[in-house]
Length: 273
Ligand SMILES: Nc1ncnc2c1ncn2[C@@H]1O[C@H](COP(=O)(O)OP(=O)(O)OP(=O)(O)O)[C@@H](O)[C@H]1O
Image (cartoon, rainbow, N blue to C red):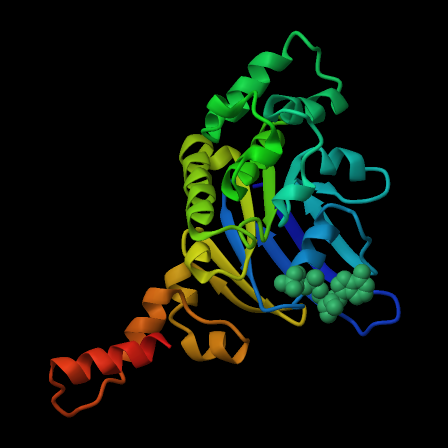
C-alpha cells in the first residue's frame, strides 16, 4: 500500500545550528488526519518545509505518494500539497474573495471557462459562497482562513497542511475553521490527507492521530485518547492535555475532606487559574 507521506532516516540541521532532526521517521497513511504538536521550536514547521521541498534534508528520504522528493520531482510533489499558514492577512492577493481563489487556478493555467465552477465549488465546501464578491480584508479572521482553505481546495490537493492556521483567530473563528475541517474530512474521507500543526490540544483531539515532537524527536504517536493518557510525558515536553483532560486529572486530586458549596466553588475557581 502506498503511503501519503513516508519519511525515512531524515537528518536536518539549519546552517550553523545543531542537528534538529536526527534519524527521524514518520509514515502518514492516505486519508489520515494527523495533528502534529510540540512546543515552540520543536521542529513542526521545519518538517512541513521539508515535506514541501522548501528546504532540503541533509540525508534521508521523503516519499509523497510513493514519489521520492528530489530536485527533479519537487514541483510535482508540491502540486499535490496545499498549505494554509498562520496569518490570515498574508494569504490574500485578490481584490475579491472569488479573485483570490481564481489566482491559484490561473497559476495552474486552468482554462478560464472552468474557473467559475471550480471557484463556486471550493467556496461552497468552506461555506463562503455568499462572500464571493466581498473584499477579503472585510472578513473576520475565521472567514479569511476558510477562504485561504478554499483557494487551496480549488487546486484539488491530495494533502493539506495547516500550519497554526487557527493561532491568530478568536474562539469563534477557531471553531469555524475546525468545523470546516471536520466537514472536509466527512466529504472527502480517504481522498484527503490532513496535517494540522497546532499548539491547541482541543484541536488536536479532533484528528485521527496525534504526533508529538520535541527537539526534532518523535515523543508520542497514536490516537488522541492514547496520546492524551500520557499526561506526565505531555507535561515534560511542555504540552498540556485538552481542557477536559487537564480538568479531569485535577479533579482527581480533589481534597479528601468534605467541601461545602462555597469551598467547592473556591477550589474549582483555583483550578481554573
Ligand atoms: N530559518 C531558520 N534558521 C535557523 N534556525 C531556524 C530557522 N527556522 C527555524 N529555526 C530553528 O529550528 C528549530 C525548529 O523551528 P520550527 O519553526 O520548525 O519549530 P516549530 O515547532 O514550528 O515552532 P513554533 O511552534 O514556534 O512555530 C527552532 O530551534 C528554530 O529556532
